[in-house]
Amino acid sequence: MIASSALKHYHCSMTIRKSLMRWYWFTILGLTLIFALGLMWRGPESDYTIRNVTLVVLGLFMYVVLALKFRCPRCRASLVTKSASILHGRPCGCPKCGVGMDELID
Image (tube, rainbow, N blue to C red; front, side, top):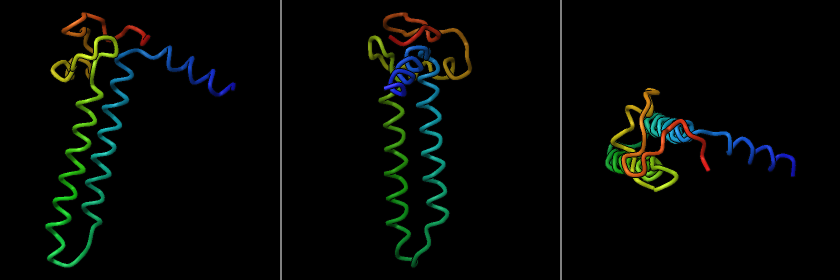
């Protein structure tokens, strides 16, 4: 019960920018792990096609996760076009509803 309350308080004090940064770093970590898997994957020569297809599919999956989660929490508009401004801390807002990225998540 106490952990749930603390988690709820932590989530409520998070800004939109921080939430988007978490998804960005989650994707970077996932892509790094996929790259490491590709380096560690050893097998016969005929296995390289399977390895390459698997790594490409996993990489595309991580990209789709970022594209689907990099959205405004209020109006659900995509923020991919504003990602450079968001990630570098410059002031910006949602192109659809105009909410600032440094506002708290509802």
